Image (cartoon, rainbow over the protein chains, first blue to last red):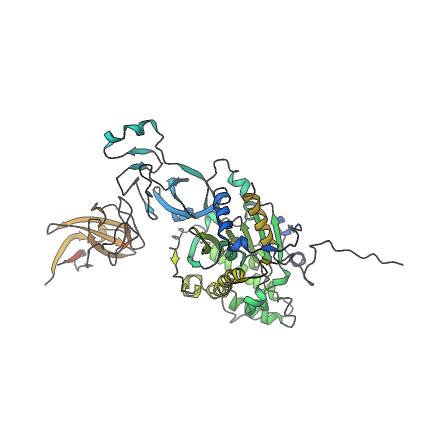
Length: 460
Length: 105
């Protein structure tokens, strides 16, 4: 008798043991559809040339075909709370004045005087009108031309459209996005299915509790990719293995612009089979920096309860107190797992009921070898109370560690661990004789997906 | 020897993130309140000499209404490229009578 042997399709290999979907089967609360998505089409396993990260040429292609065409996150609505407030968004060699022009209205102006080209605004601030510091050409905050001194010398301007050129602009989750392309797809289409997946986490109603920025000596994609898989946990963040299901992580892609990783927490890594539930519980509270409390003192695990359940229920109670709302409908997964979405090309957002981390990686001006790494933490405030002011951006010097930013707490040392790799990756890619990288088929599939979508833009 | 001046402005007249211009001894001075503390600066931007009255105050920075140059109210130091010249600052405190009290030199 022959046995039927299931032949695994290419790309279907997974870590032995419990999967994220298996863990969802343990939930006693109804699991929402977005968590049940399990979407990872096989994308091949060819090597990828390091030129994509290290060459000036590739950066120039992105400058020409990528950044002018994508929806990109510029700032939070709360950063420019009053009409007339504006934020200067810079990308490669472009500059936009992102302005609040009405209670719920924003416009993005090309930051260039129509007289002799000087940038109109040098920095973030507030204005009743935009007056060029060179000769005084003036526009109102809606971009309408108000005049220039010595108008008698400028009669030829009468036949020109002197309103400030604008970019496309839109908002989601409290973030303001712009697109340089007049013919771009609507923001809602670009974001899909992100808004749907975040329906339990109304990010527009969270406030920015921390905002830290620092230059990193690597291409923006090297930086972004350092956060797009949990495989590096084993070597880079080994102290968190006692409570992190790194190799059990699920990786999904949704269309061209969105991908996700789900790393279960409150379970020990498959690499560490000897860890006890008590050790997992103690370490996740003390070391993750993301649970509702950061001390294991006074926490005794009842017999028969797993660390995952115990910590989730502790979070449920404490988070609902912090936000002033019941979290009875929240699954354990939503209360403690690291569920992290990427929005193409360079913004990443965590789900969560409090303390949602956001990352953004921007090219450092026109430099292909360095990037600006930013992280924000979005927090809930108790329902019915006054919304706190957003945190000021803390710009670290290049020689400063992330742990020197007290506002990001326990995340600082974790980012420092990632930081210890990023510039080193750039250096090593340049030194590489192999000239290419070989990605893990499943755990690093989101990186492949990022590059696939980049190519769609570069080849358009 | 420092000259002091009583501004005759009750401290409570100025709320957080607002300012009041006063003329004392021929000087045009802007008294500001930021993050709960009082500051006094020359009411003239060191960039193009615009009045700073009505300039937005956020987190201890006063922004010039004209081109947006921001000055640190604690030190008078400007941010950005438009000017490198610091704003003159004056020590200001709340007197026993509740009015704001300036030290001019």
